[in-house]
Image 1: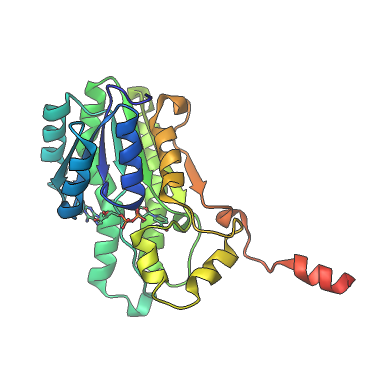
Image 2 (image 1 turned 180 degrees about the vertical axis):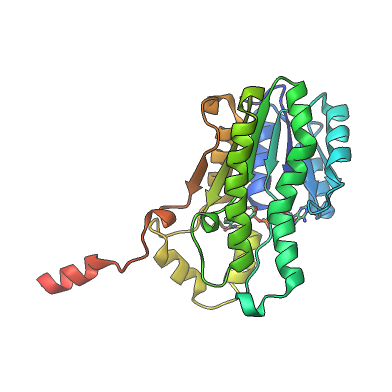
Length: 262
Ligand SMILES: NC(=O)c1ccc[n+]([C@@H]2O[C@H](COP(=O)([O-])OP(=O)(O)OC[C@H]3O[C@@H](n4cnc5c(N)ncnc54)[C@H](O)[C@@H]3O)[C@@H](O)[C@H]2O)c1
């Protein structure tokens, strides 16, 4: 019961990584406010979770959404201890072709939203004597992907902004860390991947672990960072990527060497 008596706000908490976090956070004694665009799914999920879960319709790109959300959460559950900024959207497009509105929306949902949420919630964390912020960045924030212009920029921004939060608020007893997933089996990725024949197997070939992660594997690391077990960890960007960002990208010489020696 790591989270007994604790309250978390989780953005994008009705699907994928966010939902896996919420499910386990509630199972381990915590209360959760889910901030979601998909209120149909959020409503169904909350009714399954019981009294220690609630949801609000929030577009995380709306700068004015988080102050009322924080007030509602504190009023309902008595305070806020943890903020999991997890909502995100993908985006593909090379620079000359990328529509300016698409760039702006990608940066707004993946990066601006993290600032808006932290700005509104940090005073509530301080009122509790401290707390934890976990931000979902990406392996795509640690290095670049071909054609992933806006997403790469946004997620790299999340990683360094998280470091700012960590040092600025360390003396407030607030920790801030980011997680950097590689490919994860969630609707965000799989809807696109499985529509293109051969893409999943190519992706699996590139990841050293040979597979996509399950959302629960990513949530487990976010839960650790949100918990007191991580009391000494702040400012970290933790890859949860099956080894993806440990590889330089150079050719796999094992087959070549074996063939040469044969
Ligand atoms: N799936 C992957 O392979 C992968 C890899 C690296 C990072 N990530 C990141 O993980 C996070 C979670 O993604 P997921 O894979 O679980 O995807 P998902 O699509 O399953 O869940 C994302 C949730 O966020 C919600 N959401 C989207 N835009 C929103 C908005 N503007 N306001 C409020 N809610 C919004 C969606 O309704 C959805 O419920 C994202 O930040 C994503 O960039 C995912």
